Amino acid sequence: METVFFDTHAFIRKLESSGVSPVQAEAHADALVEAFRGGVATKADLREGENALRADMQKMETGIRADMQKMETGIRSDMQKMEADIRGDMQKMEAGIRGDMQKMETGIRGDMQKMETGIRGDMQKMETGIRGDMQKMESSLKGEFNSLLRWMITLVVALFAAQSALFLKLVHG
Image (cartoon, rainbow, N blue to C red; front, side):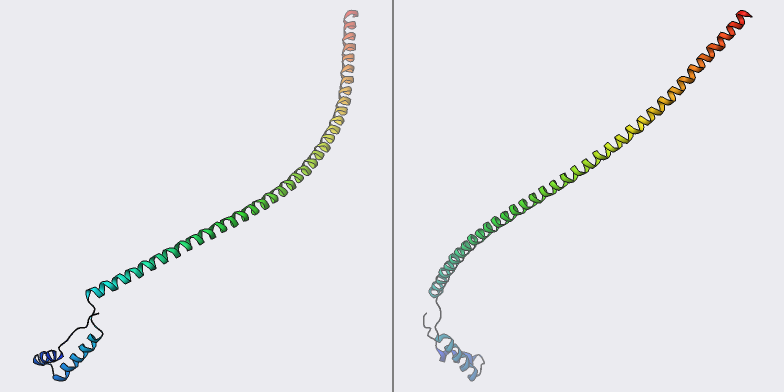
C-alpha cells in the first residue's frame, strides 16, 4: 500500500473558511490523518487482493468438489450395500412364504382327501341304503305284480267260465 501525503494545515484552513469551528476542523484533520496512517489501497493493491481471493476460491471449489465426489462415492456404495441387503431379505422372505404356502397346500390337500374319503363313505352308505330300498320296493312290486297277475288270471278264468256258460246257455237253450 502506498502512503498518502496529506496537508493538514491547508485542510484545517479550508474547513475554518467554510464556517467550521477551529476545534472541529482540527478534529476532522486528526481523524483523516489517523485513517490514512494505515495507508490507502491502490488499484494494483485491489487487483492483487482480488487475485488472491480468486485463487483461494478456486482452491475451495476444488476441495468442495473433491469432497462431493467422495460423498457421492460413499453414498453410492452405501446404496449398493443397502440394495444387496434388501434383496437378501426379500429372498429370505420369499423362501419363507413359499415354505408356508407349501405347508398350507399340503394341509389343504390332506383336508381335501379326508373330506373326499368322508364324502365317498357317505355316498357308499347312501348307495347301499338306496339299493336296499330298491330291493324292498322290487320285492314289494313283485309281490304286488304276482297278486295282480293272479287276480288277472282269476278274472280271465272267470270271464272265460262266464263266457263258456253263456255260450252253453245260448247253444242249449
